[in-house]
Image (cartoon, rainbow, N blue to C red; front, side, top):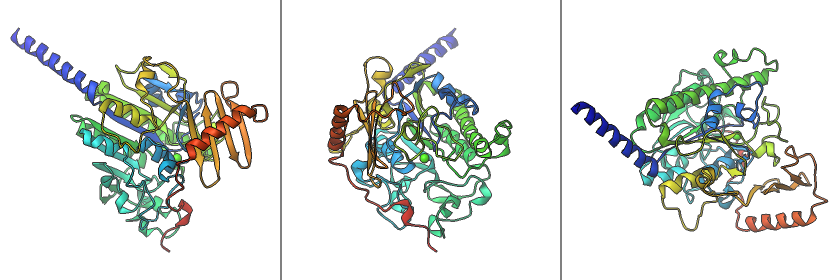
Length: 455
Ligand code: CA
């Protein structure tokens, strides 16, 4: 009798503690894939790639049908996600050079990223995978708010352990040699013995197990399925029926990520923290042309302003807090991740650097109606094009000299250019773009193509 009463009290106490933690500081896991196409996930209708664990996230949470990133290639998109601010506000409007001697080529120290915002609020912070926010030592994740780093600094990597032989980015002799650097664990180089995606999944589970008693933030930035297209037989063997070699390897790479997500969900459940953990899953940009990916039914690919470049697989799960199995069909942005977590945590935000993201929780729980964003913007500085999503309308300004206006509700695949019939709306959208662009800053660092190693 006594024992059972104690158990009841203990259980009650645990529930109270867990409820309190949930009300204040949920764990946050952001799972970012690289160049995964809109149509390359089961929850968006993929017919050949099987993603049961990505689908589980959506089924047990919210699927965003209109989830966007802030740029159609890796670096700027990640800078937007990590700061919760449009990257053009601080000059990150292109992929940076990976020259490790360049003190400008990374996320500027004048900006605070999500780890630097959550850490003072008591969070343990980790980044596993691709950093891409600068290779100069001053940009190292450990100097940018992350307690733990396991991954690589540049914008991509090879996947097989035996290919990772360089001790530093500075040893690169030609472009993309940096895809062969040994993996970094904090400041140390380490050797790996597994396929890189599996290695990152192992590390993610270990991080969660280590940090389970503290509020934690894990930024799990898989470089899969970004090229080079490389997969092991374990995953390739799942797709004997895909005839196209690139598509088959790409499918295998997505499968490896999916397995990792399954292991993470299993760990959260086993540790009893799945109800206190908010998970966002998304890709950093659309699938790349000719690399085995599919953005169906959207038009275009990575690097383009069409939906296929910027609209991505996107889902969130927070068991017991978010509804489950629901589609949210208003536009949302990767910018919203930081705003949503920080609305729970209330860590101070610099007054002169307000977030562009919106707290999504009241919209997702039905407390607020309507759209979180009046408009969303995109800008490509080097090619001088802009795009805006305004309600159901999308206007693309000066892409390859073309001006295009689409109604996405009637024309999801952006086939029917209405620019000549919508002169008033076009003018209004140009005005909104100009106003938004007024305080934007030109890129503060040289482009990726400016440095090809130290020959
Ligand atoms: Ca990417």
